[in-house]
Image (cartoon, rainbow over all chains, first blue to last red; front, top):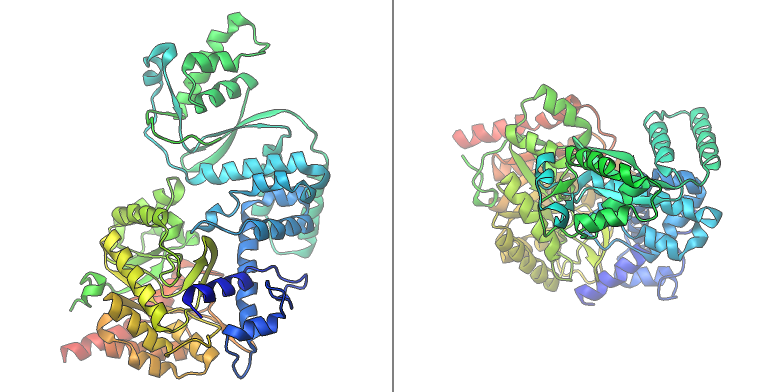
Length: 298
Length: 283
């Protein structure tokens, strides 16, 4: 057996889903009994069969990737409930195993996958999708690159309305249908104050369920960004979001302002002052950079 | 006396793994530590807190990079994006050598994020050595490979693990990160004499040694890095030091991490063996 074929064979078994009782399945990915499949390439010893030796790796794989997804998406777990989240996570990881050398990227395809496989979120699809987007933005805002920022005066004396600005790679702007930022902060606060007590754990679960149940749809525009190495959520006005989103898409300042105020209820006379104030805040937060070659992400 | 060319001719003492729960203690108390080992992948990112912390550590301490996902033993080609980002980090840390595992973990672009055991075949040794050379040539730092703990053996194997290790490092002309805890764990899982392994290692290539704790189960031992080092592992370490001389040593503690003090004190137990090696070399 060549190195490649042995590795393909073993990887298929290691990444195959576990049984509900978290054991290795009796049937191999090729439809044959797993015992025979494992016995073809793994030696038994005096204590463990080939099946049992392979099972150690199979179980470790799933414990590792599930625990990573659990850590990265506590908000989605609150939305779907512990059992719902676990089932969804297993299905996602079966369809989308890691394609990156780092576990940090494990959830990178979750939003797209959940959109296609909406049954895993049931009636809470919109809420779940919003939460995934915010949690993934949180991960990216935490460790994406920061370019030298443009200072407020640089922005002011830039190239006028034809100026092309760039958002920092770590800034994400999102349009959401639910105020999931509040829910996520609540969930994280609870997780941080968690201590190992069953009573406390039950109370925490109940609180989470109540928090999700009382969440009503409400249009929210959000920037997920970083200040002094900490990630923050900043609520935006609809027009702010439109403007920043247009800048992210590479529009000129003029085009971005046009886009931001499309269908706006803000009186025309008030707009210049609003734009000036927004730009002052964004530039103070260091959200703009000079670098022209940074690929922009949503 | 500097150890050998495989660790950049440095003479490092006892270090510990840099882990997040200890950041605050290290940055505020500034304890005396010979060196820190970082997990490269944790810092192969664009920016933010991890790199900010790393830069502060680099201002005061020596840092050596240790990777977990290069997968020298995978049959597929090296991941160029991984290498590019790793090289950026190497430039940042100025690591005197760089280690990763003698294992595989990805196939057809899918990653298991595990350290899967190699089949001990000549084909695998050749493929692995070629990739180690490619990595070293690209990164331009000495590369050393670590023996892993394993729970399975393959029918196709043509040699023992220590023969395979020698075959690979000689073909690649690289150094060894000898993990004596991994030798112990594998020896119990596969019924071999761990001392035979330590005695067979090409001592002139050992650039670094890992020590760690593990967990015992009914039918096997799991390499969990969540306990102190047990006496049989210290005995293997003593024998390794006796053979290879004073060598950079690092304690790994990755789960249920206790206080900085506890981890560092456990690591410093290695000093008594290193001191005897220094005395033996002098006498």
